[in-house]
Length: 278
Image (cartoon, rainbow, N blue to C red):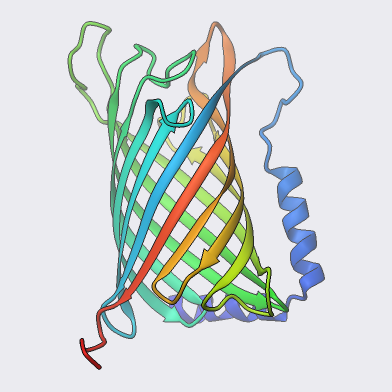
């Protein structure tokens, strides 16, 4: 039944025209910013960030693949730690246009900026389990992808400012949706030795018992220039905007980070089903 449901969703995307896609994306961009934008109960801060990422996909069979990922996230572009993120997952292809993934993440978040994310100004660990579904579709020259994720996050919590380590790891739930468009800057499709432009937006929403102050968790916008060298290697670089809401009130106000900076992605895809030397 799940497979049939996904095929129905894929068919719906196939029937959409480019105008429908553009309307949906524009509407999403307008809806993505958090509510209460102009109210007096907001506290705003900002940082200059740099994210440097590795993504590796290893094809194990026609259906199965291994996803590996490391993100080196820095504050003040590269000077100080913001976050270290390691993620691994198992991919399964339900359909040429539908891929699902289950995986695990290990994240270290550091005390950066004017108001650290941890209320005691401490580094904290997060262990994460996630499930993902990604739908892909080509409309004219434009490649669209829609990524849906559910995350079960075990986030370290200190009992007091004097604690030297996290005493608890309460469970936080979060859902994410990302829409991405990419278009070749030469020719009609992205193939070997092709530059391309990519734009994406991703919104994060928390839910469940420990959601606290941030039902809206964060939003990310990226504008990237990419180059596909071959089927194995793609590189991307460009601008990243991250709007993040704190999980607690700061001086009695809802706190928001507005982080802007550089993002560089390295993408590697290896087909392990092919025999060496052929």
